[in-house]
Structure formats: structure tokens, C-alpha cells
Image (tube, rainbow, N blue to C red):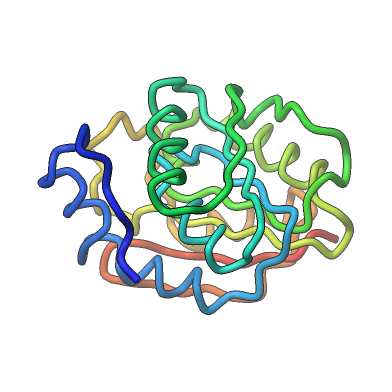
Length: 188
């Protein structure tokens, strides 16, 4: 079932975010075994969070640094009859206790961070995950969209996997689409 869009979002923006552009990542996420409680870090307008809330039949926690995006996410969730909780904060200092989540997701957000902040964020993801918990990460493919949207990083898949291993994760799935590289990793 397609998502219902708020009238306040331009159709062009909605179509770009929910159409072909992200379709392959949405399908990859839908194929993953995710479990609640789930935290979506850098959730933005909440499209993926709403889809995951539907998939889980449970509330998804959304964390972002932009309150206006979180307000939009709340509206999209309300219109689609799912429950999300929104939290203002950053990936480098997640406002939850250790082991609070079974799944943490970070879709197209790590490329917006400095090298130091990427490492700090990965440590925070590990901290808030239960042992054996699942981390789902996606970034643009190397060389794709590097000049757009304030990207500070341009990850090669192998480099991102090395960062995950260094932070205490065991990557066990890599899916490359035309635009994105999606990695599932288990918290050690």
C-alpha cells in the first residue's frame, strides 16, 4: 500500500523520495529481519520509518537534528495510521540508554558527518543496540551524489565495512544498487 502524503509536501518532492529513486533500498529494507524496538537515526521526513513501522506493527523511534523534518515525519505517520516517536538529537550522542534497541537504522546520513563524527556515531549505534542486534546502514554509492546535499564523505563499500568492523560490528550482507550501498551488520 502506498504512503499517504501530507498536502504540505510538494508532489515532486514526495515522488522523488518515494518513487524509483529509493525503491531498491526500500525493497532491501523490507527483505531484512528487523525487530522492535527500532531506532531510525537521521530519519528526516520519516518515509522509511513509516514503512518500517508498518512492517513491524510497532512504534519506531526517529532521531534527527532538524525539528521541522521530525514534525513532517509525525504528520506522515499520522496520515498513514502508524506510530512513531520523534526525538531531537544527533547520531554522536544518542539520547537513549545502552542496549535500548534491537535494530538501529541509518539511511543516507553517515555521508553528512565528518570522519570523527562517523566513528562516534558508529560507537553510539553499538552502545544503544542489544548484543547481537541489527544495524542497517546505507550510503550513496562511491562517486554518486558526492556534490549534493552537503555530503562530507564518499564511501567505498570496503571502507565503510572496515569502519563497521572497527566499531564492533560484523557485517553480514552488502547490497549494491545503482545509487546506494546497503549493509546489514550484527553488533558483537
